[in-house]
Length: 319
Ligand SMILES: Nc1ncnc2c1ncn2[C@@H]1O[C@H](COP(=O)(O)OP(=O)(O)OP(=O)(O)O)[C@@H](O)[C@H]1O
Ligand SMILES: N[C@@H](CCO)C(=O)O
Image 1 (cartoon, rainbow, N blue to C red):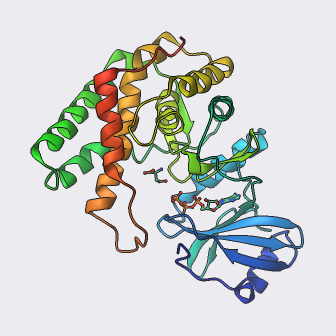
Image 2 (image 1 turned 90 degrees about the vertical axis):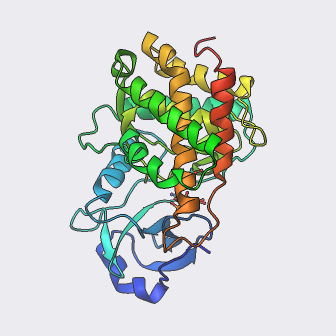
């Protein structure tokens, strides 16, 4: 169950009048999702998704919804937010921030093949290029500063060997981020959570990317590493599948060619992406928020991914 704030059609009958969408005809809560309350909304103008933000404030939301609008206007397949008559994209509903966005066609591809990974690589590179002239700035709120702040909060729950790995990886990432290779990486707005469950496919065609609520400004290569660490990994052992890695990275490279710095930073960034999700999952597992209603994701998966990368390295980016 993932509707934290119940809404009825009746509640919407007046509220919807501020949008150019006609009358609300049907509303259906969406069961998946752990961050927000989501509904499929049918209006006289078509199909939309209504989201009520449970954890993000009015001040935090412009970056995400404006980024979605910016990308949608440039032809990237992402949900397009609908503005109300006052031009606002985020409007209060039951006292919480809410937004209406276009509904994407398709469904998630949870068993991706190289053909799907190539689609993801192409769209991710197009998204990075399309974000270059996005004017708003917000750091990746799950980046290095958050890791430094969060590692001490989870260490006490871990055995000595696991705590040592977390410590040493954080030290490695701090050093790497302070170095010249890292400084040369291109950066801009990135999705930062482009997992299988945040992408829609119609057959073998990618029809949309959604869930931009971990987006922020970071290196493009970190975003690619987050994506590869989910799309190109065997979930039972954490190993990279070479055919999928090649399909995704070659397709990305064809749109946004890799630099020498990207090649030098690839393994550290794959490790950084594994650390980021290992740490957030540890945090959610050991320090659950009060409102959390669903079972947290398994942290040990990304610990395995990190150990694999440290032990085995990574395939060459332009092989
Ligand atoms: N624009 C959209 N078009 C079509 N379906 C959507 C759209 N946005 C969300 N959904 C559907 O709603 C579900 C939940 O959305 P989403 O993943 O954004 O929620 P969330 O609460 O942020 O969850 P989580 O952080 O766990 O991924 C998705 O799995 C998808 O099926
Ligand atoms: N993709 C994240 C969940 C937050 O969207 C994870 O798998 O831990």
